[in-house]
Length: 50
Ligand SMILES: [Zn+2]
Image 1 (tube, helix red, strand yellow):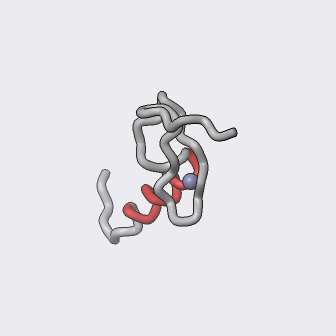
Image 2 (cartoon, protein in one colour; image 1 turned 30 degrees about the vertical axis):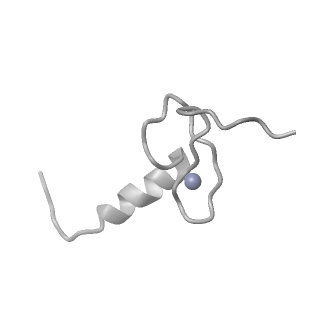
Image 3 (cartoon, helix red, strand yellow; image 1 turned 120 degrees about the vertical axis):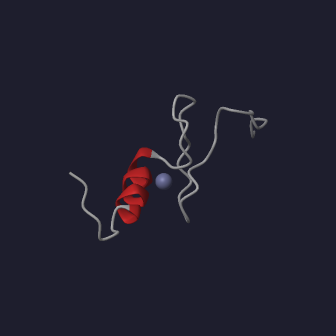
């Protein structure tokens, strides 16, 4: 039997092919695994800040 969708709970990671369910405490759009990958990707810009 399938549960009815909950609103804030049970959000899924938006990473393509990932069906990881996000914690209600995770306000990101990706699971912790892919969040690191996505942010890493964004950081790949050639800029240095110090
Ligand atoms: Zn994911």
